[in-house]
Length: 225
Image (tube, rainbow, N blue to C red; front, side, top):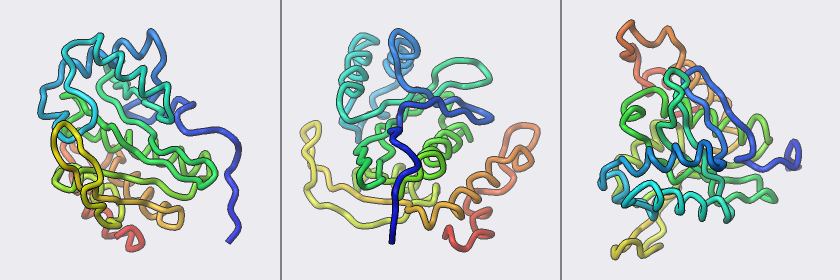
């Protein structure tokens, strides 16, 4: 099977805009300082399973994001198009251009994003950038095997469980077994179709409540189940 990317661009270099959110590379002073303030305001529970956080203040959060940006990671700020405020972050990690693969990780949703379609749209934008814009082959998701919320989020978005790396990390004084998930390019059209159909305005009532769950929508896309 032959494969080559569509160009030399790496993930994390482009602004991605949807109907609800804009996902943009972290740059200083904006939106980096906004992101640092948003992250510093979140409680400790958000960071329990993550390598980063919690932060004592905006300066500490800002330094963490700078370190991430200087490595092979590409932290992205998530901005609400309704308010113009930075309300969360997600990153492209494990960026491997030669393999056409990258991970979505270091995901931290502020209160405004939690239980909102904005988070789903942000993930759709980032996945679509990898597969549709760059022509890459694989999108990964990793989480602590005990992190049930992240586990459910991966499966809800359409990622396929691949297995567990036992005793993979030692983080914050605790062992971490890592659960691995992926979407590959052959699965992407059906995964994308389900996400786009669920996010469509007609799937939400006047109070913003979903009419059909993503799982119900996905049943119309057998290749995505």
